[in-house]
Image (tube, rainbow, N blue to C red; front, side, top):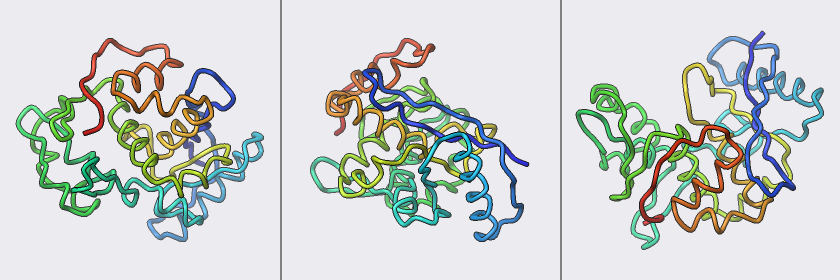
Length: 231
């Protein structure tokens, strides 16, 4: 057996947020895609028994084309001046600032896999923040920059965004909260909650507003101020 989170967007609520539900299900070991898909099916069956349906797997292992497209490895973001376009994953990795280096902007020109595996990300010390085209982001709340980046990107891809509004929950079979902090399935659930609350446009107006709106349902928001808006 295994345990994985499923992310449920808070809909029909004035306060946007994401409910995290830990689900126990049968795990099928092995690296093969077929094994991953068996685990996904088992997870979704367990979630349905909890009354949450439909659920979308958001990863390259998804049975749904839209789930594959919404993976941070595949979802693209474009700068406001239309000069640059790159994946959410590459942008996230390229924006990391460490004690002894970064941001490594050249990773924007790398594929998602290449960017994530760049050795400098492991040899530059502790993560201290993010810098995206000169705009600075803190490391707390821990999912802030990743959420902000993903939500902005999805908002630029309205054709895909409209297809996921009816889903009740989202999973990412590769995400293990014991090993990682950020999850594309959570960021997608947050996007839908912002849309449902009619707060998306306001949240995307500045980084400060995104923080104030997207995290108001959480108890520990921290005390941080942010600079500027997207590019």
